[in-house]
Length: 247
Image (cartoon, rainbow, N blue to C red; front, top):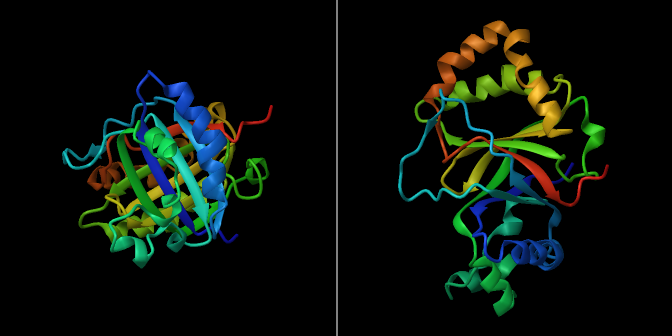
């Protein structure tokens, strides 16, 4: 697959005007961005409001925005599809993808609260047993879980944890559509992992099985995972609201 760049935006919306914003986003903004060179897919998710595990550490840095009610994804050939061109940079203009937005478009985007953005490039990926249940050839599945974090002082162990265990385990887990490990070119969280599941129910049913199937690896996780420093509320579990989930 050739979608190695992923642009992720976490944000909240006020109750007033929310439905109007979502109609604009799905009907105008997403189609407009998808026409840009190098863009391949988009997917929009609503937070399923599942609290992160108590053992996880989260940043208290006030400069890191805290929005999480919605998660917007765009996939592209490479992360360079998202970057600002030099002619725009020196004019202090927005990213090139948004250079031709209308005043109404900008008004809609300004409704976002606590907006946090990262532009990631893919480090590794694996399909799961339910890979055929994606929302199209490239579109992520009906349910996702995305963790975004830094790994101070333990990045080599992080690579081993994913490469030696987590990615192989998820590739066999019932209900799993796929897993991607990402690293950021832009944004606070240097690392991210994107899990895809065929449904929210299958995610709930099967994720706990990892600890019973992989007992020793679970002990490794208990020791290592608390060393990571997550973005606010990370990991976030979401249900896809665009494109609509069939069935």
